[in-house]
Length: 351
Image (tube, rainbow, N blue to C red; front, top):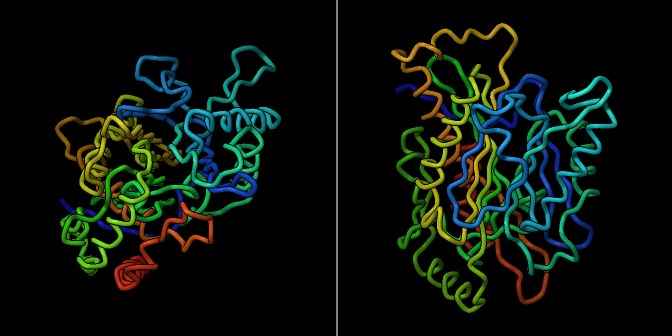
């Protein structure tokens, strides 16, 4: 199966990404604005999901799709950011039109748990509106310690999490981009300091050095001393230019969870609300004939690309996190602070 990794921050045509943070704290919101006609699916595997307006995405429902997808901090409280996105879109006459002149933006959302990490308050409608405006003025993706990933942790305080982006293309030319907010209870590193998804990286000719075991153990002990809450979550949105039906794009969202499981251990626990959205945003002249031919491997290739993009973006989210300023006793180091060689090798591979 021929797949190719792409670490550019280019999103599919018509998609805009924006981030905003709450004032004076470690939480925020990421918004992905979708072009009209997008088909959207979702699959949630965690035991504690915090989500909004996901039922409307199920195959067999109205079939409108969505106008935007929101990834946010603040746990269930932060889901109010979606209202700010809706209000902002409605003022521009964006949304489904149940009656002439009435627009109802469809904005599904998922949240990570970052409460108690220094945020003065949780994301709200103002945060969602600010992220929407940022998206409108953006031409590409953003990564690192920002938006919904600002207050993210990994490994219950082992290291900062963040926002990660990665793309994988299939032999047929379809591209799948994963945008991830990684805030998992689990870790991207195994007990020897190697990436759990090292095998996935090897498929793309990428190798990064392990975190030295002594350094790894020191960080594990520091995290244990925090006695932090086990409530976490990794959320994501997959974007593809492959022209997929609502049933097919829902299958892509489900398949992408395999990539999450390869990158993060443990995943999908009772304390994670792991949720993956997926959106098909094809060009007007896209040919769906091979994707609708169930004897063709094309759809399988898109799913495999989604899983690999998910693994790569989970790694990117943690390794691209920035060094945290002093936030008191809950200050969590970024991997770049205790394993700079690992992060440097990753950045070289990205470029």
